[in-house]
Structures are given as C-alpha cells and as structure tokens.
Amino acid sequence: MTTFPEDLSLARYFLFDRLAEGMGSRAAVRFGDRSWTYDAVADKTRRMTGLLAASGVRRGERVLVILPDVPPFAWTFFGILARGAVVAMGNPLAPADTLAYLVGYTRATAVVTVPAVAEILRPLVESAESEVQAMLVVPDAPTGSDPESRIAETKFSGKVKELAPLLDGAEPMEPVNVHRDEPAIWLFTSGSTGEPKANVHTNRDFAFNTEVYAKQTVGYRKDDVTISVPRLFFGYATGTNLMFPFAVGATAGLFSERPTPESLANAIAMYRPTVVTNVPTMLGKLLEHDDALKKEGKPGLDLSSIRFSLSAGEALPEPLLRRWLDRFASDVYDGIGSAEMFHIYASNRPGDIKPGSLGKVVAGYELRVMPEDAEGAGASPCAPGEIGVLWVKGDSVSQGYWLDRDKSWRTFHGHWCRTGDLFHVDAEGYLYFAGRADDLLKVGGQWVAPLEVEECLLEHAAVAAAAVIGVEDEGLLKTKAFIVARAGHAATPELASALQEHVKTSLARYKYPRVIEFVDDLPKNDRGKVDKKALRARSGA
Image (tube, rainbow, N blue to C red; front, side, top):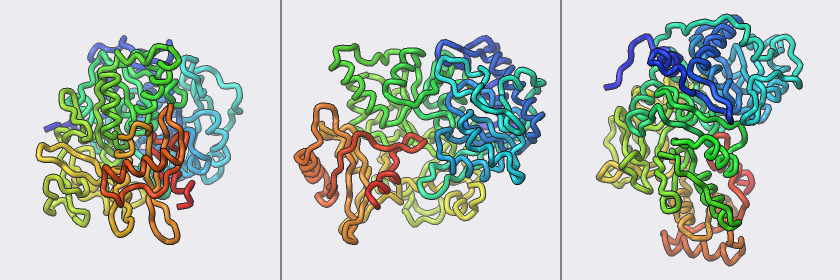
C-alpha cells in the first residue's frame, strides 16, 4: 500500500528532494540549446515563493498560470506549491471570454502569463472588484530564446508587473509545511458542455499516481529526457512532462511552438528524447509526415532514441497502433485517465501491450465496469465482455468540482469515481473503450457507438483520420463521418461510397455513416482531442 506522511509538500517531493539526493547539478529543463539544472530551478522556485508572498498571495489561495511551454512554467508551478497556494492552469491561446471566466471562477490572487494575455485581462485585473493582487508577465519566447529577457511591448503599471526583474530581486523563501490533504492543484475538465469545471486535488493525489503509475508501471528513470505534444497546462502533460521527470531526476524538454508534425520532429531531433507524451491524432500525423519525407527523397523520422511513447486523451485505434509499430518498432503505452483522478489509472506497459485495449489496471487502483443505471459502487458489475460504465477507486480521486456540488454528487461516490466512459473488460483483465455514455447515437432505433465506426473507417487504406457524429435530417438522427484522406487518395464521391460499403461489410449495416464529408484536418480542443462540438456546430447539429 502506498502511503505518505501528513507533511507532504509537492515542491519538496518533486523538486527539493532531488537536491537532497545529490542531483542538483543534473539538467532539469531544456529549452532549445539552453538548460537549467535542478539547483537553478530550485533557486528560482525559492525566489518565486518569496515574490508570491510579497505580492499578497496567502496559503490556500489560487494562482492562475496561463503560460506556454517555457521554463518559467516550472519555477512558477513549484513556487506556488512551495508557498502553500493552489495551482490553477489555463491555455494562453484560449478566447478572451474563457480567460476572463478563469480569473473570475478561480478567484485568483495572482496571475502569471504572457504579454498578449496580460493585455486582454488588464481591464478585469485592474477593476475595483478584482481579487487579483498582481499579474506577473513572462516573455512569449520562441524555443531556444531567452525566456527571461526583458519585455518591451507591454506597459507595466499598477498590478501588471514584469516577472524576471522582480524574481532576480526577490527574497528567497523555503517551502512551507503543508498537509497531504490540503488542496494543491485544480485540474479542469475539457468543458465539452458548458464552461470547464475544476477538480480540486490535494497533495497526496499527485504523489500517489507518480509512485504507482510513473515509477512502477511505465518506469520513468533519471536518465530519461521527456517531451510532450499536449501543452503543460493540461494535467496529462503537467504529469508526464514536468512532475514525473522531476520525481526521478530526469530532464524535461520544452518547446513553445504549436505542436505540429514538423515542430515535434524538430524537438525529437533536438532533444533525442527517451519518453514522448503523445496523442493518437499526432501519431497518425507523424506517420503521414514520415511518408511525405520519404516521397521527397529525404530520410524518414529518426525515433531511435525513444524508449516509449505515451498515448491518452482519446482512443488509440488498433489499426493506427499497428501501423505505428510496423513502421517504427517503437512501443506506445496507451492508457486511460481523467482530470477527476489526476492521471492514468489503466494502461499498457513494458512487456504487456495488447493492441486495441487500454491495458490493465494500474496497481493501487480498483476498476469496476457497472451497468449504466448503477447508483453506487456496490451494485453488481457487468459480466466479462459486457459493456458498461467504468468506475475507478484510488488515492488520487478529486475532492469534487469547485462550485458544482450537484455534478460532484453524480460523479463522486466516496472513494469511487463514476467516469462516464463505456468499457468492457475481457477475461484476462484488459480494458476496451467503447466511447462516452453520452456519445452513443440512436439511429433508426438502434444504438451506434461512434468510436466503433471510426476504428472501422481507419482500417481502410485511404483513411488517415476519422470522426463520427450524429446530425439531424428532417427530424431523424443520422451518422456523419468526417474523413481526412491519406496522401495519394482523392476525396471523391467514389471514395465516399467505398468507405460506406467498407463499414457495411465490416459492421452491422445500420452502423454505416449516412453522410461523409472530406476535410483537410480534424479540429482539436485545447486538450488535443478531436473537437466534436466544433464538428457538430459546423454541421448545424
């Protein structure tokens, strides 16, 4: 059983304990050809802690971090934790109304962000009603540039202040003692309906998952170099590309540009990572990028440094994984996690990869597949092979959603979390994702799981990516597939008909998509998932 002392500061657990272990001179963060040791990050963290205290941030108050993947993210993150305050994170590319919502919803005492966001939020922060005491601004630095350079384009006055010079002159402060069950980090839901809600997580939640998943299941090591496709503000990447490498004395490689096949390939060439945090859509794009390079007579992608890639956030179709394994012979550990549980609680792992599955439960967690109408974890579980809703129990479960008790009651049942994800489990304990319970479509009186249709479409040689939604036509619900065609395949009516026939012959006939629309790419939300809300809006659904 994994237990922790009552005094559990995450700043110590993830950062300062590495100094005590003699790892201070190791590279903690790389940013282009620049690097910062654990000693350097710890020094800046102490100064950030002191600066937050001097700025009026008290223990238990929220600090909102709206930063790209730049090194100041690290010492801001750990400085907030060392102060005993609570980290909340947002996407710097989010719309203005979402950014304003985050400030109001979190009731943040301080905001740390880049110039463009500071200008958007300035009127709100400087209003008489604002609880923000200081908005600290960091350069929006391209990878390899100086992320602590002076900022010329922003006017600093009042609550809006430049971080770097203040940090240089700040009085260092050691981490305060905090209880393992004090709130530490808020993790937001993806906001597929309405505004995102924050899961309130305590210190022990992050230490627990780090021990049982990062260290014991997939095996992070101190000689690892990590990079990530999802951005650091997303809990999946905060774990895999900041907390987990820091927990073992490894190196986090950061790049601030928007993740594309080209920018990711550049980061792989630059850092020679051993662990890559990925998502299924980018795995597919890397395969296409590798094809394109070879057609141009150039060398393909060199992934020889990578020990393993991680995949989560959305389903990894078996055809896509098999294409990846055949091309690169590079393991992918697909898993399932959630903001409600902080991170991954079921996963494929070294020596145990079953394509098409999400692996087995991570030791320390307990999973049950329950009937959709089950009102508690004590109900009788579904039989092996039967689809039901996944319930998960473990010591990283959220305390609940901030300011949404009704939703909390529907999701959290004591130690258990009702995920809303549909799964079945086989006789060997491997989990298979069947979609979200609220994603199922009733077409002609029959239930259709979009995921099943998407995976079937991906088996066709002409399909690079697929997304299926429901659309209304004269009062009837029909399935519509958005298709990204692979290079060399024309998006024609003949191909659309061939894809419909492929589904009809592979699945029950009623599951075939009645409408097919070819697109250049599928829209993504800020978590890197296919944004089906945007696709529904595009279709007028």
